[in-house]
Amino acid sequence: MLSNNITKYCFLFVLFMGALCANAQQIKWTDLSSLKDSISLFQKPILIKIETDWCGYCKMMDAKVFSHKKVVFEIGLEYYFVRLDGENKDSVNFSGRWYQPASFTIRGGVHELAMYLGGIEGHLNYPCLVVLDKNLILKKRIQGYLNRKDFIDWLQVD
Image (cartoon, rainbow, N blue to C red; front, side, top):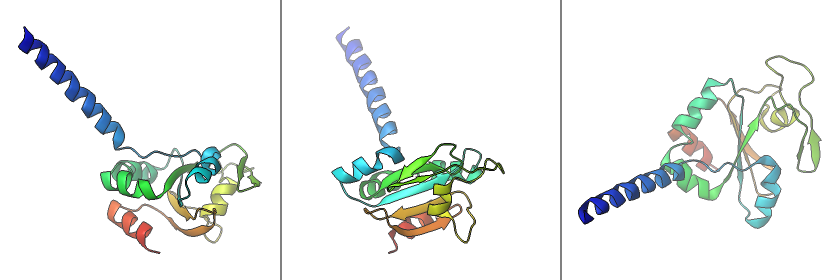
């Protein structure tokens, strides 16, 4: 009977630890509205992923890049990760300025903030990755899908 209880508790412990490990391998995304508060507590650069809900390459990056252990743990310690919906329908206050949603609808239209941060020569392709320093100054950006190795290489190059 004691052996049976020990086996049951060991099994439950293994399940619990597995659940903790599974949750630990996910990016902790910071909400854009709370970014200023986060930076005031601990200053580090910001990585913004501009995406849409219909973008297959955005979802592929989530599955193949942003779920990888090295990205989650090592890079996650050095950056705030923020998601920005490129077709957001709300006005957004960023760095003391209000940005508006698109007033036209071509696939929903591109939000002003998404275009401001990620646009290159008036175009925005998804996904778009943007790095800002702790003062919210643009350091670099790249449009399109990156595999894990290319993402890590791009992020580390200064």
